[in-house]
Length: 368
Image (cartoon, rainbow, N blue to C red; front, top):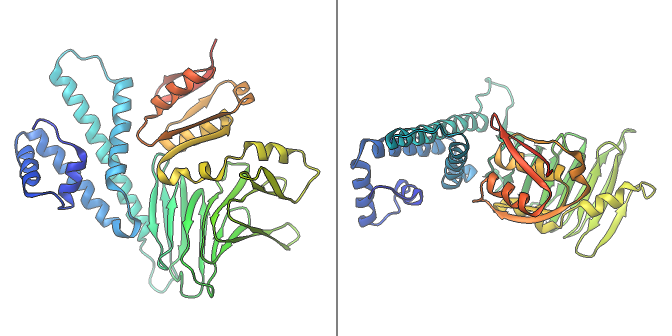
């Protein structure tokens, strides 16, 4: 066979192929030097992922590898030199794929260092994990709680986690499925002095530094939200399933919403008119948590919000040239296999925008 499906390569590396398929893969590897080189690169990625703790993080090598290859294919389609010789075109594509593979190996090496940092003797250490824009990850904590980490996010926790407490520090976005332990509440600390406290439950927290709001969405169970205010006191709020809390970092105001019931459950500052806008611009809870299932979803979002999501999701720098595009909102859902340009092409057909690419950065403006 001249080409081979990446899924078969992954199953071959997992030693899950039948004898017939194993023979076909081995034949494909030996059929050309290029195939051998490409397989060797895949094998390096596989080995690097194991060293990065694949069973602890549950890193989906197949998805991550395909994502990087897709991104390289995207850049190839938009920046490939016009070559006449088919052999040169083949080498150009092969070079781009190898470049993607090198990026993955470097990222996995960094990830391994972050997950297993060397600590000075006698000093208390911590574990940190970060995910770059364009990637996502999943890990299992020492207490069997599961964390999905979204693009551009990082978490850290003390190496004594689960001995005396269960405390996580989050910068970015994560979805948690918390193992029950009433004697050791699960705490998620954000950079703005805002804490989410749970015992055993499923919820999403979004606290990117550049965002205006800290957002908590409860899927099941119950959580308490704890705010350390400027006077040193603590304000506590409770969330029920299907409720979403939005904490305004500047105004120090919290609004709790139930989109399915179309109601504001709690508003700590009723006089602030912006709460109505916060309600209208807040997606339904299914949209908020859809990212962990590889769905890119917009629910009545402005282009500012869409651009932020696309930058994190695909790892591209995007410039919104016309601010008046934020006058309208947009709704849509994409699967993870669409490229950023396929998403932009849909938006271009269904909204008054056009986009251009300059030096591998994307510019969006209003159609003339």
